Image 1 (cartoon, one colour):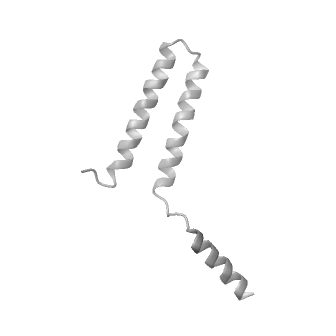
Image 2 (cartoon, rainbow, N blue to C red; image 1 turned 120 degrees about the horizontal axis):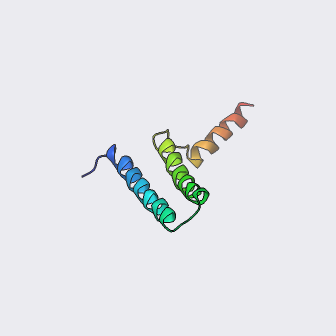
Image 3 (cartoon, rainbow, N blue to C red; image 1 turned 120 degrees about the vertical axis):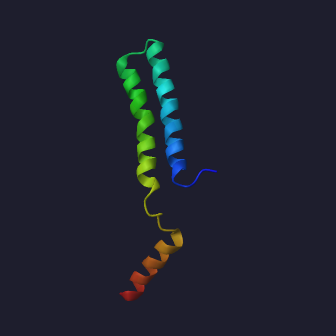
Length: 76
């Protein structure tokens, strides 16, 4: 079984492998270099965002946000 540390790296590796196949197919099909570069960027940016956000603190729930706002109003 995969532990929680290797799962994101495995998914990221699969994502990058699929992206490499797509870009290689685009180059072999005769696409311009700018098109292949655009495919690479469009495919890599979401992965970078997910990896950056994946290890952060979870966002607050709606209940936590509402409780904080009510507390601020009562303090005034």
